[in-house]
Length: 342
Ligand SMILES: [Zn+2]
Image 1 (tube, rainbow, N blue to C red):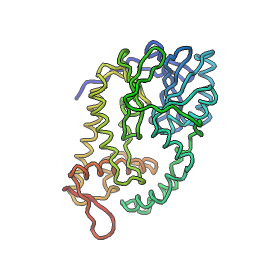
Image 2: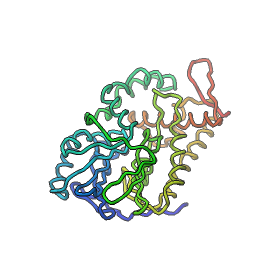
Image 3: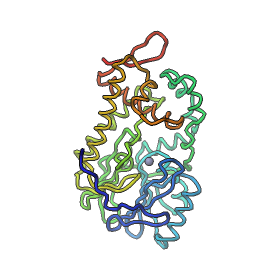
Image 4: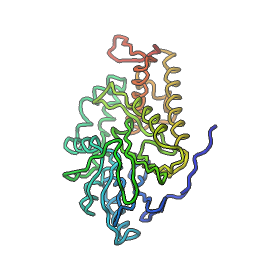
């Protein structure tokens, strides 16, 4: 068993309050209407105001929480710009409203911007025939309709974005107040997710790429069925281990800030190795559809909402193993692809 991560701030900030995690760096929490019931937001001193990292989801409780924060601990303070880490609604959802309400400009990666724009222009794009075909093809059968009816409701909890943004790219230096942050990006959980590293003050804003206790979701999209998001994710973990020293305070998108970055990077890679091993063991019993593999990977009972994520995550492992030559697709003649050991 490896050592525990260290949590210098074991109590999250209560609603409407902030916790100082470093001089001029504040941590606030916003509610989410999901089982994962919160998202972290960070405020970084930026000259005569504060830069904000992530916005929360677009709903009334989030907007009320922002108003309470700005009428409470941040009363009289100016917000300068909004840095969005990635395109998921729990982070970018309220960005449009927040920028307008507090006169902020938006800073993010091009992929984050374009993904969010695409989803707002075509909200049905993720509920279309590609998903239906893909789910059926990989063994979900009649369950497909249940999943599609659930849809991707949360994708709609996003405001219209501001008309312009400032693009940041991996390798950029972003000056925030007196600090220089190096911009890193990573794929797998979300495309071109932005992370910020301040070497001088040993701070690492990791977004959702590295969380203390959750394994970030890594899903294949039906629109890119042969995609390899898990390969990209594992590559990103290795990149972070090379590029970011171990002694940083990790400020993540969910759960608690922690010390122990490199240990957590190793744990996350091991988690996926364990999943690969379970898939190989299951396939040793005979060819399996992606859907067949879910019980081997997820030991708790899955509701329809979790099944959609679990399926896409299982698919990510299978695609990676096929690319590595550890599994091959077979077709028993029924048109349903199954994998078996190579
Ligand atoms: Zn998130």
